[in-house]
Image (cartoon, rainbow, N blue to C red; front, side):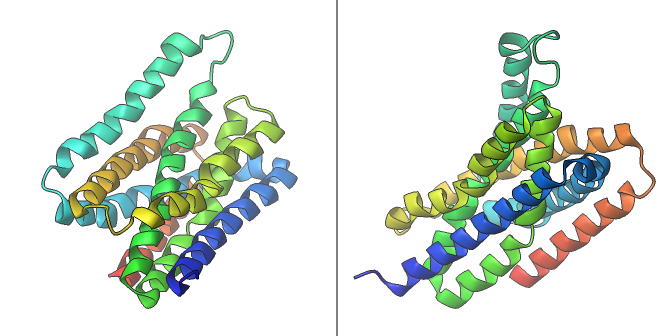
Length: 244
């Protein structure tokens, strides 16, 4: 017999997947509008990702594992080295000049979304109420996350169809996949191990926000991008405060 906590955690992670997918679908159907306003989505997402990383994920991971600074650095440098690998050995300036613009954020967001699925398993394992609170807060950032992943992949040279498929695989389906993989093992995941995963995720997200999203925002130099960044920070603050 399937227990109630498993049903609840799968519903929560599936909801996150659905919300992200809706974001991908909406932006793929209104491409012109998306291209015109991508800078605002990127600045908003940067505000959420960087703020949540510094205000919640990093402090939480430190509580779980004393070696967090090393893993945080590892997550940051890991994506940087992956970026360099793509540019030096996979791409060249003629074949895929902006390829990494889409791939690197996709990898970072995909890893984070997979960890979201694990976090759902952990929080619902504590109690249904704790899991529901976490789910409500986490779902808030799923819609813009799907939009940004799609738009960055498209800007990186992928067709609309491929951008939608890759964004779905990285940002949407990875969450319930993380839940399915982790739920049977949730009681066996040691607290320090979860802290390590959170720290690597935080390092990856800070890299995505600071080196891919914000520089693109600065290139566009649109007047109200700072406001969307501030809204992203505010949303992150609400998420963290509610969780706390």
